[in-house]
Image 1 (cartoon, rainbow, N blue to C red):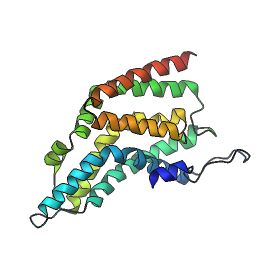
Image 2 (image 1 turned 90 degrees about the vertical axis):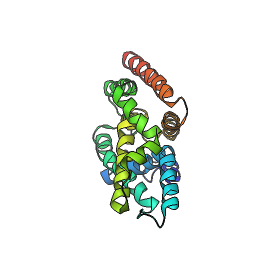
Image 3 (image 1 turned 180 degrees about the vertical axis):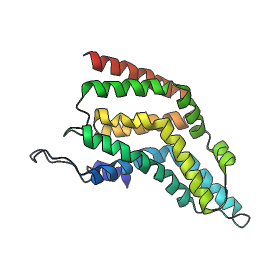
Amino acid sequence: MSWWFLATGAGIAREPDMPTMQVPFAALLIMWWIMMAAMMLPSALPAVLLYARIRDQRQGTATIASTWVFVLGYLAVWLAFSLPAALLQWLAAGPSMALADKRLASAILIAAGIYQLSPLKRACLRECRSPAQFLSRHWRAGTIGALRLGILHGGYCVACCWLLMALLLVVGVMNLLWVAMLTIVIAAEKISPRGALFGQAAGLALIIWGIVRMTV
């Protein structure tokens, strides 16, 4: 559903012959949140499915909230991320929905690349790549416990991927090809056996791209 919404222009696409106008902030916020859901839920699926399996196995022995409560907590964190992202785009992006300032866009590319190589990125990525360890370490029963689990998992995912998401400000938020490519990169570094190495290679590529873009 989220991908269909993006593919149809998120409800705010502009026809070629329409005059340029600023998109309402509320529309940008909704678009960012739906886009984050479309991009992040595939890589969060192992944790969601594992939670659902634990709930099925423990029914009758413990009070475990529905899986949707866990997912709701996860998506709430991405809503919080969407607020500053939409605000930055609303203030700084042009009609193409990409940053008009070449130096700022290049700086985001370089910063995203450096962060991909950072110890903080590696620490957060380990949490995202190990859903069983994450759930066992942070497990709490009840609705509040499930919501807390979703928020914690979402927090690690935001800390892991926030600068990769900022790349959408460089290439254009409505560039569906880049949305799909970033989704694949994020899923690969979280799920594939060599995911950490893949993420570091992507970081080096982003640094090179940013330097070249700034100097050309």
